Length: 304
Image (cartoon, rainbow, N blue to C red; front, side, top):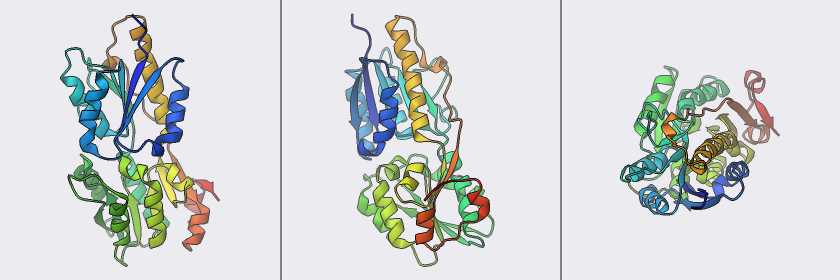
């Protein structure tokens, strides 16, 4: 019997948006691993059938792009007599959500993604002194969008009003037009924008950044990739670190399978990012006539 080497890669976003992180992930895998890709380009309804299709051909399944992929993988493997091991990435509270359980078949990376939305909100409040209204761009198809907004409401300053802007409608895959309509339709009273953590927005970075630029509104994002591509400011962990951690987790499982040893992913400790970073694009700040407070500059990595 050949050594296990077939790895499925289920991703909730687009393959292009993950290019750099996927390269980091792939570079850490042992030689001879055969990766089978299945991105669904933000059509979350295709995640479950995508996972079911991959399970027919792989030894291990990687669920990339956050909780929507991970829960689809959990549902698909629950129907198996001997559930396929699953490694997930960037999942908020995998223990509390029931995704990661002892003796279960899933493990991976506790992504610290939406957990930092409130911190991003406070950074916007520091960037724009005296701010009274912040809009929040959300994907209405995200499973925990209500909890996401609740955390933000709890983390805001009492004098700041939060307003929700939905990019799209519930039950339909988001599009570039949904993003441009949501951002372009913000009222003149909007003083800043928080783009929430979601694979849909990460997959459409050029659309988000372009619409924000046209609106000329200060915005903060989850990943530094937004800032490298022209966004103003980001705060959070590094995507490449998260996917590198997922690769290490996958290697542990593959080694056990190769040695024909029992493997229980739920017994493998969750990986968690060790570093968060504040990144500011000074050119974008200049283009928006924004004076970034020195208190932020002192803490930030700056891109000119």
